[in-house]
Image (cartoon, rainbow over all chains, first blue to last red; front, side, top):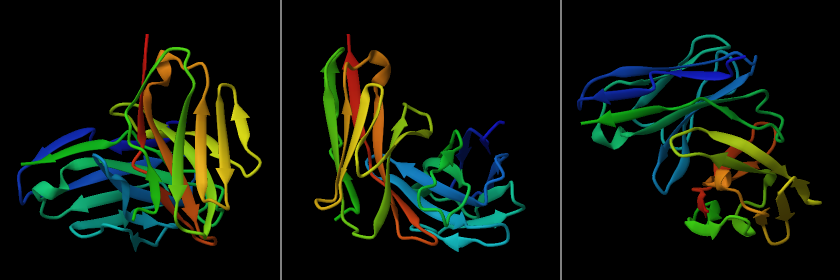
Length: 115
Length: 111
């Protein structure tokens, strides 16, 4: 099993450009998440998908959109990138968001720089 | 106030030392507790879950004090390979919980 995969690994954008970050998991997990990680701030939840067909906002959703394409795939889109969106983006998945003892599995991350 | 607080460190210790990390959480609806490890420029990975009775995994011991809303991680006989950032993680609520990550404590183990 590959676990959670993310593409691309690195990306540089100019202000105003758009892009989509891709995430896929092969563990048959129901729930998937997008986080951003900035120095000194820990991981902050952008959006999550509790199950296929549903998405919900997290702590910092502004400037982002998501699509849960199927059970395996959950993409994050930046419509008009801003320098404040320079960060490391992690996708994660969990088997069952209703089971509080469940833990998250993370992808390798995407390092995004917006100039 | 952050929901999960950790001393950011860094902790600089020699090989073989014992080091302890602390974490406090503020939400009394917190249900499950974990320590994750994150290597430089890598993703976080689960190190261990934390149980009320305390639990041990080799050189690592985790403790939970629900009354004080406090979690700890003890690393004995530190190795160079233990150098990483340790994240305190809390699941809050049930039937659709949310996960709160601490900002992490950096550890450097030196020869």
